[in-house]
Image (cartoon, rainbow, N blue to C red; front, side, top):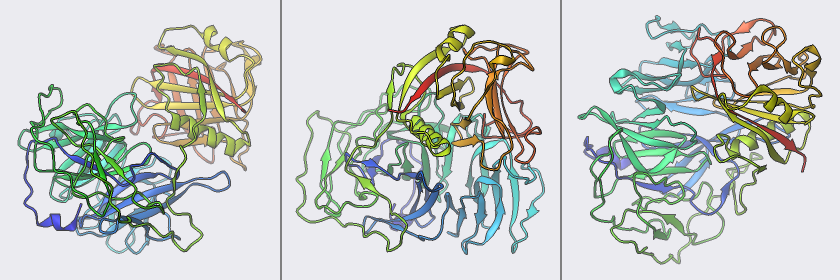
Amino acid sequence: MQKQRSQLKWRQEATNTFNWNATQKLSWSVVNAFIDVQTSPDGDVYAIQSIESEMETKKYFVYLYSITSNIWSLTDANFQAKAVRFDRLGNIYYLDQNNCILNSQKQKLICGSFDFEVTVNREIYLLHDGLGALTKDTLSTPWRSVGVEDYTYKALSGYKGITLLKDQPILIQSDGTVDSNYGGEKLVSISAGIDGSLWALKQEANVINYQILKWQTVAQKWYIVSGARGASLSAYNEISVAIVDEKGLLSLSSQVGHQDEAQYLGIVSTAHTSTAPTLQQITNVPSTTNIPATTDAPATTYVPATTEIPSTTVAPTTTDIPTTTVAPSTTDNPITVPPSTTDIPTTVPPTTNMPPAIVSTTPEVFPTIIGQPSDSFVTKITFKKFAQKVNETFGTNIKSFTQVFNAQSWQKQRDDAMNAILLKSRIFGFILTNAGPILGFYYEDPILTTSQGSDGKLLTNTMIYGISSDHFSYKEYEDNYQTYFGPFVEGNPAMQIITTPRARITFFPSCQNFIGSENVAECFTGTNFDQMEQCYWTLLKPKNSPPDFECKQIEYYQGNLQ
């Protein structure tokens, strides 16, 4: 990711061998992890850190990585942003915690976006967050004036990802489909490099770290890049990309002096490594070569060696900390490079009351999950986030979960599900839809009957969690609305309904699907809880799409206070 790379002659090669550097690759856990990454046209690496506590709302801080000193620096302790973006001239833009886009002077341009890109002509392509009153546009809609300087915008709806390739938008539709000019592949995210290279994360079911893809212009195909997986990525150029995984670990890639035959999507690769890359010890960080990486091996635990080894997110205050790396090898014998006796740089925390990025020497604590089935689609981080939000909102102290029911579509009956949750408090439900998005819900008090009548309606604390969009809906302090869980007596009483002031899910409790009586996830306006509103966060569907979904699998857990 060095700036000198701008002087290199980039080539459009069919290669899928990259080395991966971790900016923190120790057997430690990240307490305040990175959630997003962005590279500038100059090769600078920015990352967003999310900090949340029971006493404060979620905060977002922008860090800049120094390759020469191996240190992450907080850019502004008094400023928050959920994302940073750059135009091709290197001008920086921000997305603040209120979904407002700011320019490099941190002047507010427009609000109502969950992602965006800006051209050199100050044209803003923003993805509508579905929450505000901003008019929704299409690509053919005329440009609208922002009202600040000469900025214009289009508020696009029905998409979940965007990048600009030489100022032309490439969009990912809500179902993951990318433009047909790029193979129509299903993607999670996409990023274009300053040199026109194109990288992406492949959409896959039931995973949280996705395969990395790279577009080959000559072959007009995506091919798999082995050695790492991620949840977010940002491309710099043909050989360099930054990846954040689900744990918040950020890694940087670098191609070395060898290449494999490309593995294209849908083709079984016969590629092999002919020579192992040379190990180099940079910035006095000792390296260890481990077993070879393959195209199927997720390398977020073992990271290949390269000529640029970034340090930890905030370097520990100890010295000579070895970094584990993985490099392709023709032998099964690991090669060890002795540790250096020179100290690696350490980061001095910012002299503010804002906490810096933190690295802990103790394992990250997740709730204990009792009885979770082997085919479960619910991740540990989902359990942790959901429990933290419920504890914060309702003053509970949920520390563990016990699975009480699990069923795939049409596998079990209504009574099976209802009897499993009868008389149980603090029930967490998770629904995997056939289209991929995952919904979560919570109700606090126990149901006392499995009746399909109005006597089964339970007035209780509730919460709905759009897991795929990381959005929570619940009754807030000034809301005049009674939330409940119970039979859907105004429709099909064999279904259950759970409500919050701004959302509701109506579903068959044992994961059944009927034509004419569909499962639905709906949302309502913030001022009129009876008025339906188009929303994206529930099912990640585009504007004017019906709010119905098909259940693929459902799981229920009881939250325990010990």
